[in-house]
Image (cartoon, rainbow, N blue to C red; front, side, top):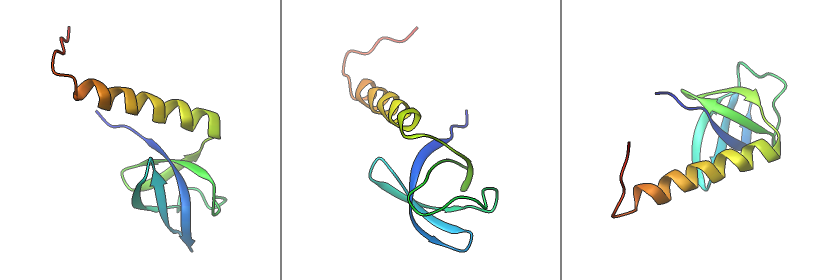
Length: 80
């Protein structure tokens, strides 16, 4: 399964960005989003920023990721 992660562009030089997703920093190409600028929130998939995303949607996704991480740390997990 593939997942696009929302991240904020914290550095940008031409089409190479450094993005921050929940405190983790990654390199991502912005070739597919020439309108992306420093501070924008983007969805990153396979090393590429693939779309712009608003703050509210990014926060919802980050919350879901945090919940999955908490579940993964649970000792008595039962899955269906």
